[in-house]
Image (cartoon, rainbow, N blue to C red):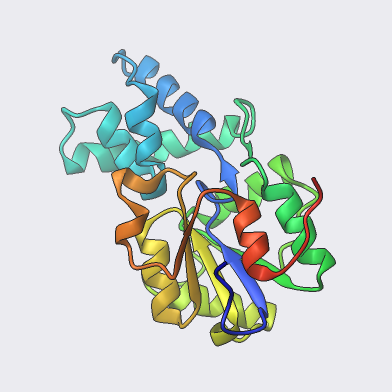
Length: 226
């Protein structure tokens, strides 16, 4: 059984694809954008795969004929549609996330969120989808001038939560999460249940790769409700 080389101080998570499954809401926004532009709807699976890369990647999948400038021009409308309707198509925590977070809090540990999602969307989504969550830190994609894979947002989350990076864990579903966590000095965990951007988590250099949040609870030495 894998164990941490330290007593955990804080646990930090990516948001979309790690804690929350928001792909259906994002897909619904893409579908509405397609309808407005009288374009065919993309398949769900290839769009879900790139959710962690953000709005430009999703638009590029939906409209393969767009060049980079055309993709960028449509980002504001896509985000506006998403903001208006997010939570309506079923954004929800992944299986096992709720008991994991409850177990972390019951054990007296602090946890936080580091996402590349823009702040205005993050601040609107969390109270709507998971109003009972109480993260010790939330760092969004525009909280700082840089975002993941730069380590600065992860370091900032540790500062806000009052956690030492060398005694903390960063969990994510994208290579950039592992890169940011490593560079910030945290123990890194890659999850197989997320969007993955078409990649193989085993190849990202994470300290641990897991299939279910229960495995993270085991790593942290905490109990979760069945």
